[in-house]
Length: 319
Image (cartoon, rainbow, N blue to C red):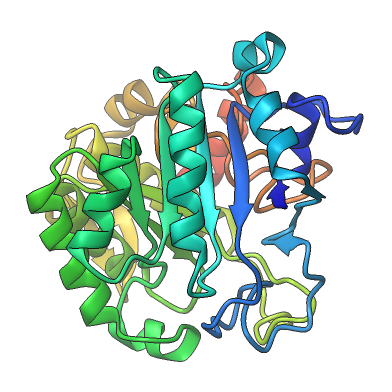
C-alpha cells in the first residue's frame, strides 16, 4: 500500500474530491510510524494526530500497483510535472522508495522524481540518484541549532553538514525544507537561506501549521506580514537580486531590503515570490492553509488583486 495526497488521488482518478487547484506534482507517502518525534509533525512518534495526515493534508491509502499504473495514464501526465515521494522515517521506507522509483522510471523515464527523506549518508543519497531520482531533499526545517533542539529529534549540525557534503558531491540535485514560525528570527531565517543558495541547495519554504494532536498544536501560525518578508528575501536571494547581508535588520526583523520600493515592486510584481517554492513543478496546494483563508504559498499564479494584497502585507513596516 502507498498513500497519496488527496489532490494527487484526484489527478490519478482514484477519488472525486472537489478542488479549485490540482497539484502539479504527484505527492506519494511511503512508510508508517516515524521513529522521530518532531513537535510539529502529525507523523511524529508521539503524535496523537490522525495517521493519514501530513501537515493539514489528508493522505488516503491505495494499492501501490494501482497507484503506479495510474501515474502513467495520459490524463494524469497532462497535469503532473514531477513525482515526489515523502518518506516517513520508519527504517525501511527508503528501500521501498528505491523500488517504486525504479518501477516508475521504467515506464516513464522522462518524468522527474524527487524524494523528501532523511538519508543518513552520502551513499544512501547516491543510491537514490542512481535509481533515477533527480533531486533529494533533506529537510533541515529549523533555521538554527537552538530551534532544532526545541522542535526536532537528532542533530542540526549533522544534518547541516550532510547537506553541504551532498551539495558538493551531487551538485544541482540537493534541496532542503525550512519552516518559518518555529521560533527563529527573520535574521536567522534569511541567513540560513543565503547559506543554502551559496552551496547550490534549493530551498522550499513552509509556514508553520499547528496540527491537532502534535506537541505544537496550541502555538500560533506566523503572521502573514512576517512570512511575506521571508518570501521576498528568499526570492531576492534565489534570483541573485540581493544578498542577506544587504538587508537592514532591527531586533532580528527585516526593515529594509536596501532596494527602493519602485525597484522592489519591479522584482516582485509578477507575484512569483509568493508562490510555492521548492523543486520545479511543486505547488503543494493548501499544505499550509485552508482554501478559505488567505494563502501563505499560492499554488498557482496570483491574480492582480492577490499580488497587491501580498505587496501591501510585505511593505507594512518596510523602509
